[in-house]
Image 1: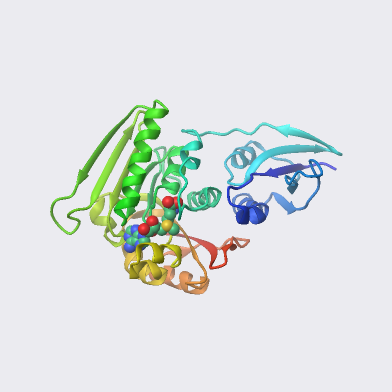
Image 2: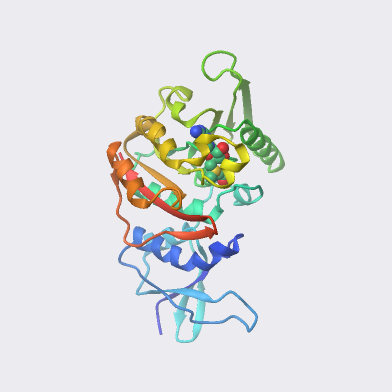
Length: 328
Ligand SMILES: C[S@@+](CC[C@H](N)C(=O)[O-])C[C@H]1O[C@@H](n2cnc3c(N)ncnc32)[C@H](O)[C@@H]1O
């Protein structure tokens, strides 16, 4: 027996755990179609140990493959197989910040961290390269920043729009404490907008010692162009409201319909996405069928990327999540 075996990362969400191996295989198929990854339960680490190895990869891995595997969302450890023996393989991992930037915050409505990583990876993969500069990532429905934090770990500049002042407040407080606790040089600027259509809402910017910038504004996402005038983003990544928890929580009509949100937001998102940039969206299939999502993106001038395997998975009884990636 040769090739490689993957120990899947355990998720903080038990439901997602069940799909972890399949989603990682789909991610690998999107990035490196030549890698033949198969779902198999090949070993048990112990009688009560739930950490079966669920994924095997045939053939050899070059440096590029290893770098890619080091940044996949679901891989915990990689082993080279020698018959029944498994040899751990060191993977190059480049991270600008500790991963606890993404894991510390716990709150209702948080997008699964591994899934967010997957969505960001697939979106970045679809975008044409952006010379030698930092990528600019926008989350147009940012919540408390899971996507933005992933972007920061990957070394990007990030910007977010979120309509809930409570979420923006909580995210700002978290970030400023985090940089202080981790002794990262940073400069925070916050303001409350006094005039115009966004009067009363808040925004903040943080400049990090690493040179990265974080800009977050409380606003409706369909106003993103006015919120960040003149800015163009390489990737837009968002986990749309599910129409279930958030509708109930904020009690607003717009939260209940991803379709209606897309109708007003897609033209604006396209405007702020640079040519060659990519958008990656996650949403609840129970509120919007995949075919309608794709039609909507096409009608707004995006080219939808066809993935070789499905990323659809069940989150809970009322949410079946899917993702789509498209380019401008
Ligand atoms: C699924 S949550 C995203 C959660 C986020 N990824 C996180 O982990 O914190 C969707 C977010 O979209 C926000 N939202 C809904 N409609 C919006 C709109 N029209 N403009 C801006 N934000 C909106 C909601 O307040 C909610 O925080």
